[in-house]
Length: 104
Image (cartoon, rainbow, N blue to C red):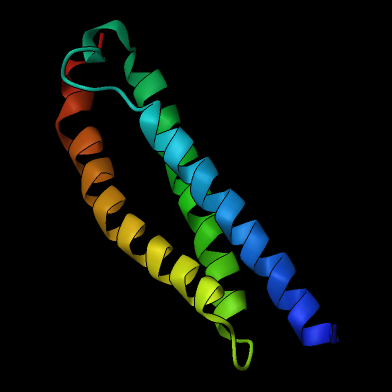
């Protein structure tokens, strides 16, 4: 296995893990049903944790995308994080702009 494919495998694996981390952080965000049990500080902290996880995954995806001739699996993880970021950015905006006003 050459250096590039080893690096691709490492980055692809890391991106897979980072997508999982991002999904986990998003699952911990408040909802309409739970936001009243959250303080404003807790809401903002949860949003920041999600944004940090999103940035980490995006950085990894960028590094992976800069490699030559990546395989279909690596490309699919890049596509996955692009889709997740679009979806989650809207959710984070909603939590920041709407839900935080209902926190205790």
